[in-house]
Length: 607
View 1 (cartoon, rainbow, N blue to C red):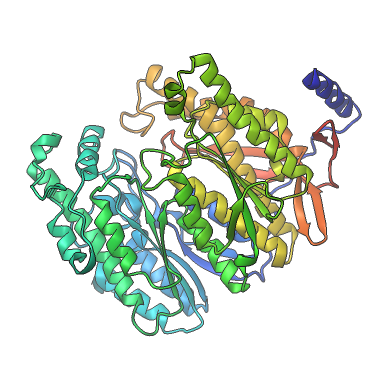
View 2 (view 1 turned 180 degrees about the vertical axis):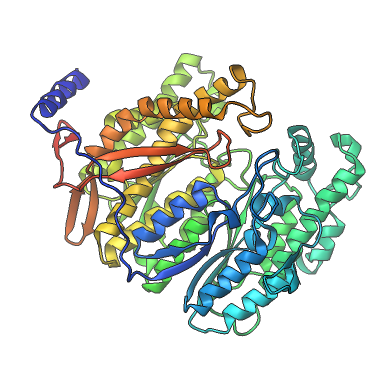
């Protein structure tokens, strides 16, 4: 009955002439904003567009090299201009030096890109890489790193954020001839427990010496995993190279003159078990200085760096900010997925500590920000209790409907909210549909649920904490506000509409009707125009309700005094597949003028 009444009210509003405004082109960024020189991990949207939005939302402008210099190409796809599948390390090195010569003093640099040509290539490269600079000088990857860090350390005014990763349990499929069968075999090999090293025994040499050993100290026969000796040797050589480069970087910044350098290391595709990563993680953590961090997630590293750069520059005291945390679903004491290395609640605690904010129980009334997290349902507890399937379904529904109710309560109390969907698709599209129908999506400080579960915590908290701090300390402009709105819209639309609706259709269409591989449209070569058309038509339908929700939303524009502004129109265009695969998409978001705060009728906001 309530929904019928709401529908009538909204229909009347629309008939009264409150329709969608025309979208305007992306606005100019002010020329006097501080510039951050940024070398991305690769060319996927989480490492490019969304980093741009976040940086602009806190008053920075990102300077980036040409996309071809950091692009990754999968097997069968056209090569980059340097003739390879990976980024141009020499050109990137010279680009950074050009920024330094031009007077830049803020840097966020992916070491995987600068030393290996990107994240994917860092997992496959077993040998030392050598580059040739434009003047003919040859440098190894280690020499390049030493020279680059040394040059940036010469200017004591520089603030340099170095981003690195712990190599995941297996390389990337569809790259360098590496297939799914090999991936499964090597991941099983890497996930096997190794002898746990501690104290003085925890060295890079000891870690590498134990790579081939199981937890009992006996060698792990490659044949037991369906692998050959040469396959394992190449895999372990890539791990050794990756570990050695990280060790050298961390030991370098421990020296005098590098106090203005900051390091964030991400843990990629991991396991809670005593896997091949466990000793690597412990060793790298032992090399960190105060202020450095080693956290779950890799594709969110740049978000963390942008947020921390801003927080440190404004001297923000996060300890005075209380974040109330509430979980819904019952499995926060477990990893959010099989590819994370710690229980979800520990991952959340680590990230809150990284941003130096105080954690409280949710709903206490003492929180400045409320963090709501949907976990996977506790199906094991349901089964132990002897619940029928119908009863289990009711419990699942209760989990996300309770979250929606809490969200509405905090919104009515004008308390900023960060929302994380860490359920890994366990509720289908029901949670997203409930939010679209019952919540005011555009009110959120931040949202994350798209892509890998290992990055949702870092993504949501980076954006949410940065936004809250900027509301407290920053100078609001149309540019910063519109950048904030774009990053929230990007996250919500891609998760609600693409991940949970359109992508499922595309996977079936590519496999069933085109006979192709959704993970690479070039191997085999398929009708990419047909896939593009399917994407565009699917997104046109799937985004309608979510866009309407956003256009009727308000967002917090000031904390003291508390003020809100209304979202204007949201127009989506230029849908694209950055890696010619169905896993993720990019899109342009054009915004109309912001409005006065929308009014609420029976809990629904309208124009």
